[in-house]
Length: 236
Image 1: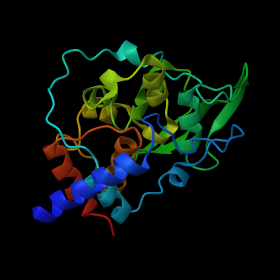
Image 2 (image 1 turned 180 degrees about the horizontal axis):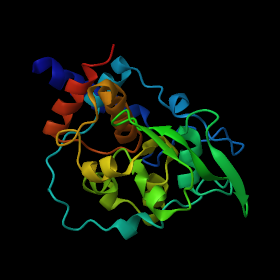
Image 3 (image 1 turned 60 degrees about the vertical axis):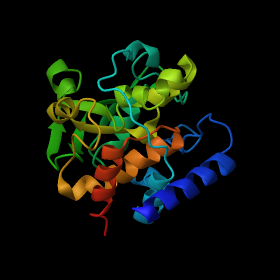
């Protein structure tokens, strides 16, 4: 295990000397002109880079469950933090829909209120097709998941943030995915040591989890690190 700790120490030194202030600099969830980027365009961390980033995260023990967690501390759900006129749910639904399948309409300032479409749930591989997302049952069947859940972020450092930073985190498009509703409910606030997606998606899932934790300076615990390292083993 000596190599792992050496990598951890080196990563921490790099993090502290090169990363600058704690305020996050989220990657381009939009192209800067209101255009929502596809999921793959944001998933830029390779397996080697992810392993190095994982080694650079601060490892701590932490309480479970988070007794003081407050969802309201992260602000209103799906705020329009990028100012494109659409809430984050519509942004993610449009971004993650199978190309050419999304049916949209204008609603107020939003030019892509998503009404219908087809999605591939990354966690299970299932095809999800909906013809009326204004129907509450259909809307509930496709949900927007925080890859690193809010309760997980809370115990990993977000409890010490101010409200503005927590709001930005909760609406960061790079940390959100459109997924199967029941699967998202089953995942809940679990970390990779307690819940994993299908094997074919574990590499991408681990990479995205690590990206989020590294960008937002969140900590990890030993069992989480072991699970993430194992999932990176599925990267080709």
